[in-house]
Image: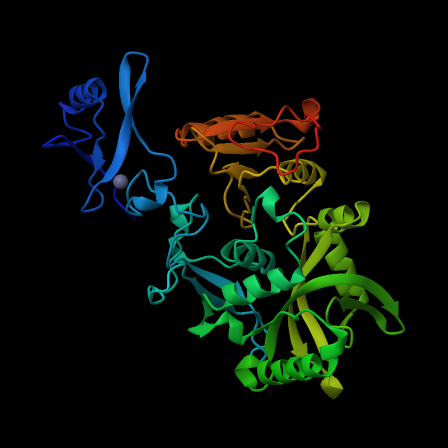
Length: 414
Ligand SMILES: [Zn+2]
């Protein structure tokens, strides 16, 4: 358990602690003299600013500097808002030898430095109490990879420019930064490369080689597969998944498995069926079955927009689709399942001036607890502005276009 951190600030030549009686006076001085206090959580100090609230003063972090603070500093916020460097997670990939799913440590690193060695520790943005580690679902792993690969980011400049070719490349790159039991995730995952008829034979050979290697020995008899679902198809023995860019590989799915999938992921599947142009991404643990065939052990799916941005429901789709036309950068926020009860923004506009925006969507069934939790979340992020849409109350309010320019000049005004 971390002890609460008392912030120390340097104002001019003076170093003053937050619980020091002189603190407020020094803030007032800094405000009057327009000095930037330095947060001393880092040796060089991190510049902050003083804001006046009524008759009082508070110290706030500068926009986009959350990641510059020490992870234990109250002003710290990781760059990607979900993970801290060295975050370790547990992934139930399953072990064939025991026949029971086993949790496998996943350690994530975002720098090129060495992977953190503290096993089992998870530093999650919302809940530091989960220090004992948490099991990460397949969907959460998919979210993690989407996030780590930058596929949650978008600007209107990229319209028409993001294809499976990019998604594949970024995902593969991200799997090299995630390790499972000390082994790169890239050593356990198959992400089908873009299929080209003229390279058909070479692609097929590479894929067969990868599958054979991944499923080779005892500890590796299961592998992960991430791909775009082209269709679910009924066959004599039940059903099968047709994965895009893998035209010659079928993933059989038993009746029970299909029913479970439909039950658990009905919002994602419903969304995928309801709108043209959306993609359905599947992540599955797969094992070798008889005669070189594959068998799905566990599967999860996620719907993404035409630009490959994850969306959970129609309202998110509406919001993300509208924002996607603007030049300003947007980031789709993804949560882990079981990531805590604090509401998270659906989208952020991190480059908006003078302050970033956090866009919240309030679920139709939200109660007053949710409202106060949103208020809490907004209060705990004084360095960004909040936009809230309650679809239960009506249409989407005007978007915060402040600092966000439209990508195409089409004369349309909304
Ligand atoms: Zn700090």
